[in-house]
Length: 268
Image (cartoon, rainbow, N blue to C red):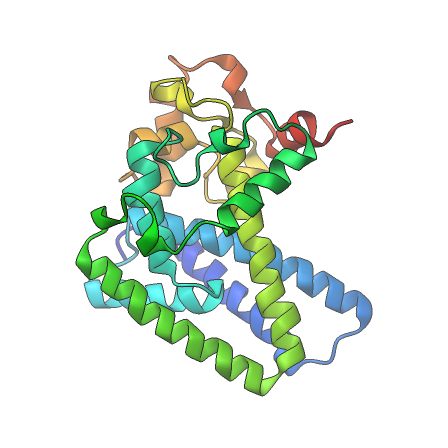
């Protein structure tokens, strides 16, 4: 393992796996089922953040071990982990909310309130296949091959899961993964919304609360991540203090992620 801090990453992946498997092996009451559904959505989002982290800074020195990890992430995400990584590294980090960013917020134009969140999620889900998007030719051949292999793998996982327990798979695997992806898209939006004309450290909203950065592996320090994308997640709070705070607009530094979502999108 390249960084000792990633012991927590592996621990979370074990817990996420146990939460995903639980409805296949246990009888659940209605209340337990709702709680487990919510836990699955939460851990689905956290696994997306982990996939983001390891795409920039792999867990292991061995390429084979990192490929094995990617297949594990794929089985937890329900989609090819390499596809998310390719879109993030070769598009979002290159264009970062400009007109060539597939996940840019400018497609929402003047839409406001909760509808802005819904419209953004619908927009991202309706994007064409990765290979058909403008600029997809920048993705290296080896990574495209990995995406194809992971696609075959995850389809096999889904088929096996449906054969084992179709209703459980539909509710606790498919539905929770769609919800987790929606949360991921919203997270991307609230990190960049309205900042397409800014530069440098002011291209991102940052969320400095302890809770959000504990559960999302310091993902709230987003300007620091864009400035040093190869830095390990455990270093982002220090980079935020040294590189971002002296130069960033105070209005883009928020204590609470949920408070920002409530105040900017949900509050009547």
